[in-house]
Image (cartoon, rainbow, N blue to C red; front, side, top):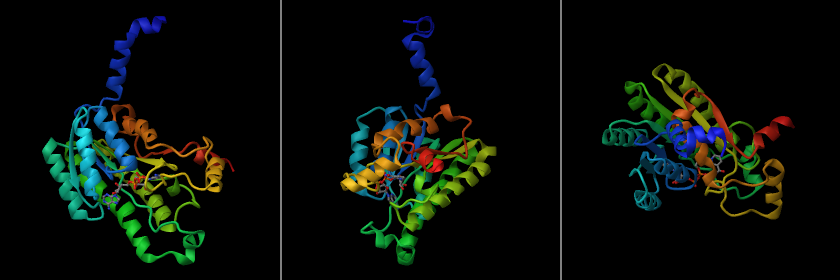
Amino acid sequence: MTAHDDATGTNGREAYLGRVFDIRDRHVLVTGAASGLGQAIAEAMVDAGAVVTLVDRDADPLRELADRLAGRSGTVEHALCDVADASAVRATVEAATARFGGLDVAFVNAGIAGAPRTDDESRRLERVQLDDWERVIGVNLTGALNTMRAAAAVMRPRRSGRIVVTASTAGLRADPMVGYPYVASKAAIVNVVRQAALDLAPDQIRVNAIAPGPFRTNIGGKRPRSAEAEATWARTIPLGRMADPEEIKGLALLLASPASSFMTGAVFPVDGGALALSHTI
Ligand SMILES: NC(=O)c1ccc[n+]([C@@H]2O[C@H](COP(=O)([O-])OP(=O)(O)OC[C@H]3O[C@@H](n4cnc5c(N)ncnc54)[C@H](O)[C@@H]3O)[C@@H](O)[C@H]2O)c1
């Protein structure tokens, strides 16, 4: 044991970490909570002692998750809502805020990938389908905007809050693994985050984006791809692998807690070094 350990001791260290990352009894709302990254974020919040509202449009997995998390620390509610429906989002956020006396953190995470990536041909510019474009923009961009607006409306009068948007590395550079609607939606939401950070800063509401690289979720592809595709990943990701949803939890906790008190308008990659690599080529 060092002199430093003696001075702070295990209790001192735990108290310090508990204070810096304290979100106990804070009300956190997570959209797209029924699966993948949203589920991992919700788990992290519940385990850290937050009061959590889970929001998704997929009823069965949403209820199953709420039941599972209810057995852990924290209070868990769930609400069925399609984020593409502005009035439904507003009603959901207002009801959750009224239930818990405020909203401290909103994770704006619900998203879709767009038309299945059947072949390279379907990802050509000439083959972009406008119905797919509108569907993806409707959820990933307009749906995120709907959620951010509803959260801002209840946070601004209290002059406090955090909004964390799940963007993507595909919003920061071209990406051969996804389609045009997806990159357009994610690039646009990154700048909406910056604009909202500017707008909401005078009211002490912080707005940041997470930019995940490839995670093993429904969108990211849970099963390993062909050996050739896996080899491509290995070349484009310095850490040489896809991520597990668990690996989003640390950043989510950072951005939800006082540990990030001077961070706003920023985009945080969680990508195994992929962006660093693409910036050096
Ligand atoms: N997995 C990755 O590799 C990756 C990489 C970068 C960004 N992202 C982003 O992460 C976020 C979460 O995706 P994921 O990977 O966990 O995928 P996922 O498919 O496992 O989870 C997405 C969740 O969002 C919900 N959802 C979709 N549309 C909705 C709507 N209109 N209203 C309410 N809920 C809706 C789904 O029901 C699902 O529960 C998305 O915004 C996605 O674009 C994922």
